[in-house]
Image 1 (cartoon, rainbow, N blue to C red):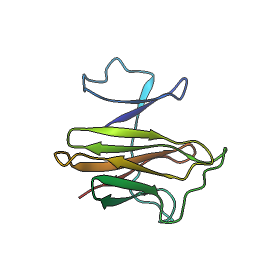
Image 2 (cartoon, rainbow, N blue to C red):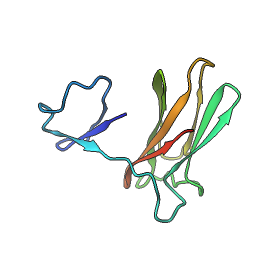
Image 3 (cartoon, helix red, strand yellow):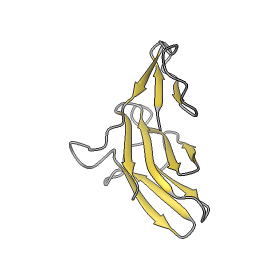
Image 4 (cartoon, rainbow, N blue to C red):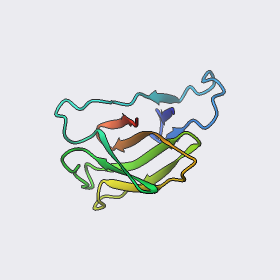
Length: 122
């Protein structure tokens, strides 16, 4: 899964089908962090439940203030994925229903200050 950020307006895009990146000069690929130096606030934590996946952000609950918050959580699956947008004041978590035929692959989250974070799901 690849995510890109516009260098001019800061919009974020997700690559659905790869067609090469030669023409995408204003978009810069976001590289996901997978370890947090403090080990507490950013790496997604994944809990498998009956028929769903719960993704929480950080071992310690991430702040959800206007100036520092999680903007979205994305669950990548073998057959696609699901996005949950978050707002300041929301809990930094999302639960995704998943069919028995599909399997989770990775969880991503985007912090407005610290960027993209990823956890592989085994």
